[in-house]
Length: 234
Image (cartoon, rainbow, N blue to C red):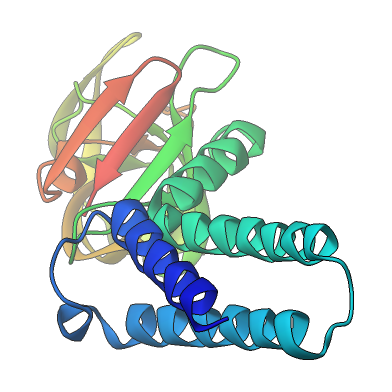
């Protein structure tokens, strides 16, 4: 009986090391990993003792039951060991189902906030963000030097448009127009929030879409276009 129990514990230890990819001693494992292993091994060991001493069943039945418990333990440890991969897979599935323009947070490097935005059916990347805490739709435009707002959306964001001076020339698809320089308290896209952003407010009726330009994008750690997605790292 003791031989069977020792063999079972040895196999469990080897399995744990194989799945976690950690060849160090158990004492070097994290607290969660160490208690996961100890608790699982104790449960299987206790069950093995019950089957071999007081189970009263045939040896083949006992072996089958032990195999089932070992298989469940294998799945438990495998799931824990690959939890990061499963989380990334889940984020990928969710981002595929997320509406275009909705910023979805995905896994990034430690200390980094990373969001992903799906391309709009129009072929552009449009973010559902916030200006000064007010929800605002903005088209990502790397050709725009700053954030550019429509007058109505600037007013919704708390900007006093009645005292603006439209002195900055702006090149648009319809020719040259003029916009007023302002400073925005905050610009948010998903969980990425930047403060004190340079921006322009266009003259009424001169802009069809708010533009999320380089005054926001260059403040990020990085951004990249990948197929139907735009990835922003804050």
